[in-house]
Amino acid sequence: MYKITVVIPIYKVEKYIERCARSLFNQTLDNIEYIFIDDCSPDRSIDILQRILLEYPNRKDSVRIIRHADNKGVAAARNTGIKAAHGKYLIHCDSDDWVESNMYELMYRKAQETKADIVICDWYKVYTNKMIVHHANQPQSPNECVMQILSGKMHGSLWNKLVKRNLYMQYNIQCIEGANYCEDMYVACKLLYNAQSVAYINIPLYYYFKGNDESYTHNQLSKSSQKGLLTICKALRAYFKDDPAMQKALIDNINVKKSNLLFIGDLKYAKKFEKTSISSIIHHPTLPLSRKIALCFYNLHFLLGVKILRFLYTHSH
Image (cartoon, rainbow, N blue to C red; front, side):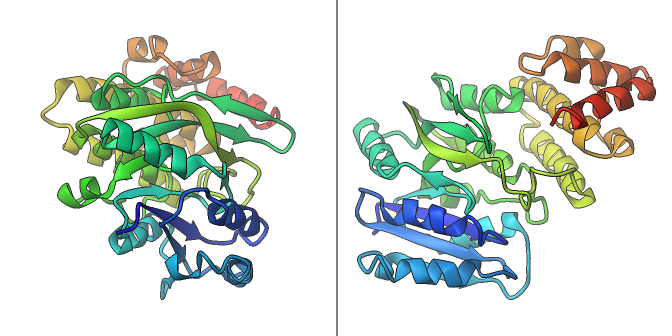
């Protein structure tokens, strides 16, 4: 059995795949399985990957490239990788990002030392002209992590969370196919909710790149992404229906999602999300003031105010 499986979806990343692949193949940990999911990428991404792999003969036998017959989206690509994995632990890596050379060794070692179901590390957010360190916040329990993700205190990514693969299998956890924005947050919440223990490495090991203009999070949200957000919110409501604490935390998450729509989505589409109280908006633990004001304006049907804030946001980025 492999120590770790890394799942890497690939779609339109010919500018970035070499940097990503080299960082993965240069890992100090041995016995890693790499599963690349070619989601019918129309560019040279796979050709570049195969060329780079020739330079790492020691990794050749542990690399698989699985091609989808049709383009299905990142959620389906992650599911394909999860189902094909053989590692004791599983982690994801986005193909326009990259990792420190000792990331997986440090995370695997922490998992072995602590017997934790999930290990979380800090990360960098990388822009074209700056890089910011993001701390995951010292988690006290898996459930606390779920609440931090829902409130926005912790990033809901899968790329900085090393997870025992049997958690996916035991609880049949996978992405909702077709929901390709925040699809990882949905999975991370379910994994953490079912985990018995979590460990933390307070070192930034992952580089989350924000300069890819082909990514789901770069441009205005598409209709399908907005529909996916609604699907995920409803699915989490149903999943946590018997847990009052999580239901309350989901209100914070709905405010986060709606604020995203008000700034980079369709104002009319925000109506499809359940209405939240002014109090829940004002007391939200992480939303910046501009987003709180936009949500309050929206609740009060002052759409002109929302449009002004949206204009200011658009022209400042």
